[in-house]
Amino acid sequence: HPNDPRVDKEVRALRKSGFEVSVLCLPKAQYPDQFEWEGARVIRAHIPEGRARGLWDLGRFHSQFFHPSWSRELLQFARTEKIELFHVHDLVLVNTVNRAARVVSLAVVADLHENQPAAFGQDNAIIPGMRGFLKRRIESYSRWLKREGNATRASSHVIAVVEEMKERLMRQHQLASEEITVITNTEEPLFLESKEYDVKVLSQNEGSFTGLYLGGFGGH
Image (tube, rainbow, N blue to C red; front, side):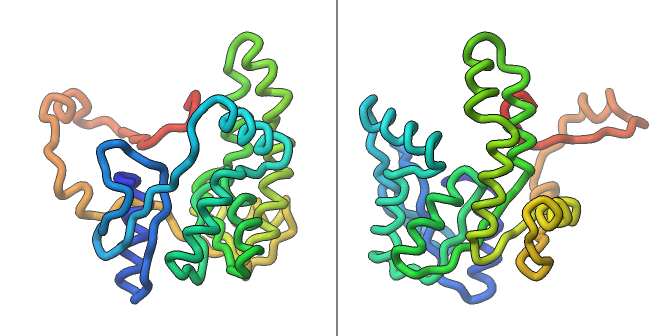
């Protein structure tokens, strides 16, 4: 951050509802370690660089689905910011946040924006060579699905973006309906109103039905 539109919308919604919000995110050289953004405090995590630390974190993540450096930063963040609830984006960090939350006795909302086991499985299927071979063994669809089940069952609450995803999580991981809230990840009307349109593109597609895909994940 900046700038993840999903985080932007959530910060605005939470602030509008009266919550105090602090955002822990990766460092960016052009931004300070701490700053205010639309009433929220943005704090940079100090994730160590270097091959040794990187290999240690990577090994722990692949073997235990746990990121030691992020866990340390989360615990410090919770104590210094007096956090009362963790809201974690995407499956990759949910287990790490759950483990840190247990240490400081906090609840966790797991915010899942897509079917990541299927997305990783699809992406790995098109990676060529030895790298693709290893990814399909180490990061298989079935392994990610198991991680998703363990992570969501350990969370206090789960956010899904569509009803289909809620139904899948209930069916595959035995979650109860009341444990999942569907919040659609739609753009705000102002997003379209504030954009300048390319007349050439409009004229080329006049009369056509056009589907627009925003975002990306690996091969798709």
